[in-house]
Image (tube, rainbow over all chains, first blue to last red; front, side, top):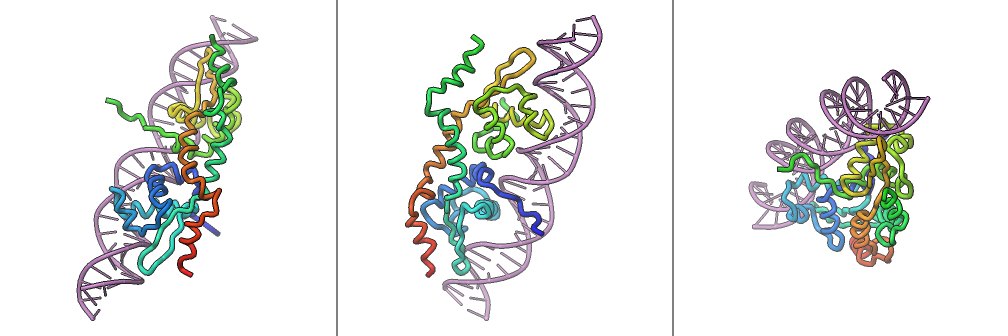
Length: 107
Length: 107
DNA sequence: TATAAATGAAACCATTTGGTTTCAAATTTA
DNA sequence: TAAATTTGAAACCAAATGGTTTCATTTATA
């Protein structure tokens, strides 16, 4: 019986600004843990926890290389977020007639 | 001096599944608070708090109508999320040669 | 082989989050 | 006007979150 495995999802993973920075940092390069830590002002365990969360929900890939782990982003899962926002794209791409009517209805 | 005003941002707002449901519910219709509550299994104050968070970060618009508040989504701010994910779109739309090389490099 | 480097893991902590119940206030309606 | 409806707000709570320090373990190097 699986227990205490917090059900990570992508929306929650990218909610934290540090994790979004990590994603950006590792999108096009592979770094080991300490190299990632060097980019932040927090402790190594704190960064490591963020990396674990991102890994658990499939946004990072880790390859062990001796005592180092080479970490890199694999951002296919972000399509979930992209697809969700796409449903509402007309809110910023159209003239929004329906919303306009709603906002004007108390004139 | 402004205090205790949690700096809401859109990424955090949409991290909660209930709030994403509220957004979906109010994207194309306006409902008052109790009508929104009817769609969920939690208490009215709980839903009201979610609505306040969404309103504070600009994803909902509320118009007071007597004792009722008519609530509707205005999702232009989701463009922030859309733009952010768009930066990584090649991860799910391309062949991902670079990532493939990374994954294959230990052969 | 002794030391340094890279990482893991545990224990702990303060704050935030997401929910509850209860009560008050304002607006409608019978 | 009395009662019902709609909402707000406060107090409270458990769990999750995001961080810390400390120590252990594994691997590489001088």
